[in-house]
Length: 167
Image (cartoon, rainbow, N blue to C red):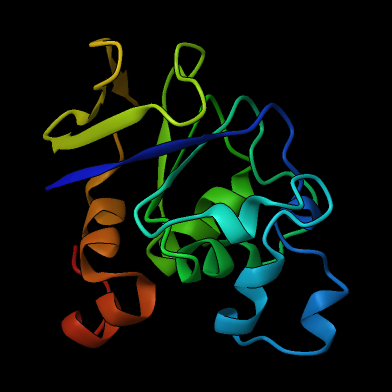
């Protein structure tokens, strides 16, 4: 599987409340409505400029803060299939896997806003090519069960397809 997209660059310690304000989920949990508020407090023009297939690229500790599952589903609802970061908060990482958002841990320092990226999934993890610069970095490998969950589109589709966890 290959994902091609445009880099949307963020820094370190992106809090889930920066992704989607917790006050927004009081009105609705409909991601088709909530996606218009994506990063509204830190990047007000982001939601209007995002295109399906864009890729979030961040530094360390992406998704820190509260364990709001809606943060991952709103990113997916905006058409963003993956987040590349140097590291993720543990709860965001698990929420991403469970909802089918692909979290890729890799060196993101050489990636700038708007650059073209191509992610290829290989047996040892992900290969992230910056098409703009020609530089390629390796993504950290994921355990087989996580790859299976992501391939199914998330935990619920995986359980439906397999009737439980396969050992």
